[in-house]
Amino acid sequence: MDFKSVIRDIPDFPQAGIIFRDITPLLAHSQGLSSIIKAFQAKFAEISIDNIDYIIGIESRGFILGAPLAMALGCGFVPVRKPKKLPSAVFRVEYALEYGTDTLEIHQDAIAAGKRVIIIDDVIATGGTAAATAKLVEQTGAELVAYGFLIELDFLNGRKSLPNVPIISLASY
Image (spheres, helix red, strand yellow):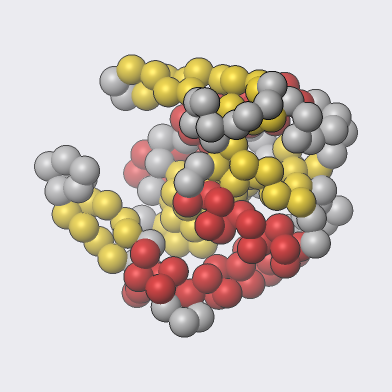
């Protein structure tokens, strides 16, 4: 499936001058989600990423992509959430945004040390959220083996802020 032909461009959202890449038409397509999951599986197989213990999905669209990918790979799924959404003890990381900061959390007991994980999200832009999630993985003692993104905004060079692991993106702009 040609993902870019189904992803909708929304100009001037969330502010003037931004083109928002809307994945909801792709998810609504009868073969959209299954095509995304199959494409991720194929890409990870191409670079010999195997023996994965967990997929980590970043709130919120990373949940949509990460949970079915975890099922397809036969591994567990762990959510990374915004503050105060997880009910047990958490690791927390604060990270810089263009104007201000944000915070992400993961349960402290979600992943045992030494387990192999892939971080999944819908978009990599500047890489700040994905890099912060890698810091959470580090706090758990797990091993980050790859990233997967549906969309990569190449012109923002988000890859440069990520750890040196394979990075898969299915559609680049």
